[in-house]
Image (cartoon, rainbow, N blue to C red; front, side):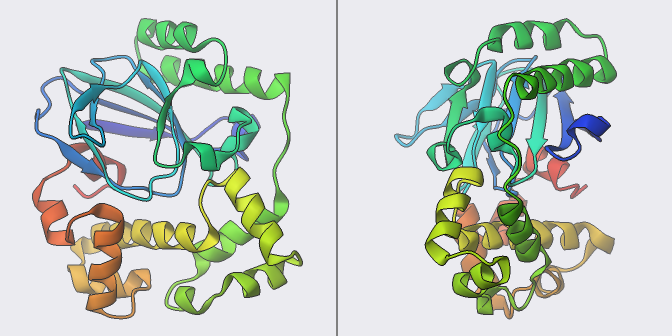
Length: 272
C-alpha cells in the first residue's frame, strides 16, 4: 500500500494533525484489524469502499464519506477492490470544532458524513475527480475551512492541555488519577469528564491507554525494537501489563496482530 501523510495548511494546524492518502491497486482481500490512535477522522473513499465487520459478523460496505470516532476496540476492515482513501486526521481534542456533535456519540462508530453535515456527496465527487495527492488534499482542506467559517466553537484549552499531559505520561500514566489531572487543569473532576466526553469522545483514562498503545507502535518501528523493549519504552511497566492492555484495545495479542500483516495499520503506524 502507498500511504502518504501531508501536513495541513497553516490555517488548519490547530485542528488537523495531518491529511493522509492510502492507495493500493491490488490489495490483499483478507480482513485486517485496525486499532485506535486517539484521533477521530473524516474519511473519503475515492476507490472501492472498505467493508467493515459489524457486531453480527457481517461485512458491511462503508459509505463514500464518513466520520470515524475514537476506537476503544478493534475494527476489522476488508478491501472490496482497489483501495483509494483520503483521511483528515484531527487532533484528539479538535474534531468537535468541525463536526459540532458530542464526540462520545461517535465512539466506536463510523457515521456517514451526510448525517452530520451537508456537502458529503459533493466532497466525494471532488476528491474522486482529482488527479494527484496535492489536489485531493486541497479539496479536503477547503471543505474543512468552509465548515469552520460557518461556525467554529473554538478549542477547549483545558481539554487540549490535559490531552498533552496524558500524551507525555509514560510509566507514570497509571498513577496519574483523573482527580490529579483535574487539579492540574484547575477544574472539577466531573466537569473534566463531561468536557472529554464532548470534545474527545472517551474518558481521560481511556485516551491515555490509546495514546500509550500508539507510542508502542512508534517504538516498535524505531530501529525495529523487540516487542518487550518497545512496550517498556512506551510506558508499560512489565510484559503482563502490556499483554493485557494490548488485547483490551486490539482483541488479539501483539504477536497475533502483527501476524495478520495488516496493510493499512502497518502503513499508518509506519511498521514497514
